Length: 281
Image 1: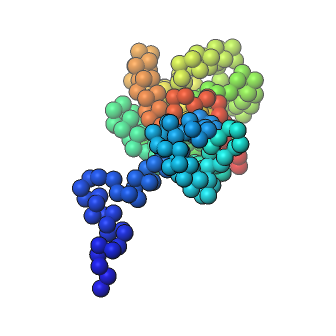
Image 2 (image 1 turned 30 degrees about the vertical axis):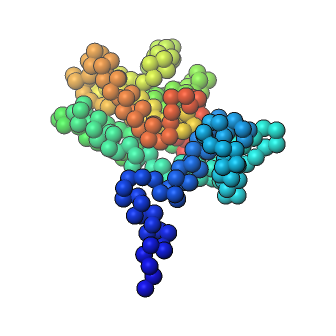
Image 3 (image 1 turned 135 degrees about the vertical axis):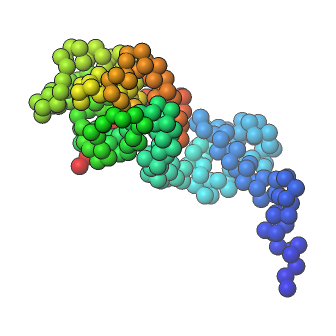
């Protein structure tokens, strides 16, 4: 029978019971620290060692191990920087991030707090595609359903998805939606409102898509900074006075921000990196 003390895994487990890092986990953490230290671009060995608080020889050993696994590359006269393996993993992580699954607990909470219907949607072939819907507690009939594709320019959700786009694209979509029979305000009025929505980071539906139904919507961003989805809170106009829509805006934006952070978005991410979760059919 093998002596338990000769098994490295058992030794690490035993040492971890006291709450102290094991040698294996300490090496792993130091490797992760190396990756964190080069996040802003190439870093020379001496600077990297200083940032990590390690000797140059230890830093060099850790960095070379990461180079061997393609997590880092080394540029002469510049230093260490991210390698292709991280790009591959980032792409895979983004593909695996299911916005519906990630957003679900957040929009469920928003529906409970607001007592109104909450939608989640993306852009699908120049339409707003409803990906999820949480019914509200009020006795208000909202005609939408999951899988519906609605005009971008007359729905609050759709307008939130367009906040990063400019007037030229807005006008093209506005004309196309109007010609297809979508309800529409005057272009000049709609355009003025959109500029205001961009500044406020949210959009309204003022009974434009369905009579007596108003909504407040906000965009969701991913790690690139681009809008990949949007959420909206919808209710009967009697529950959506101007004052309530203004106060509800904070909660809708906060929920959209929480979902965005779960998708990898950070405050310093540039805006406009994506295109409204655009999907072509």
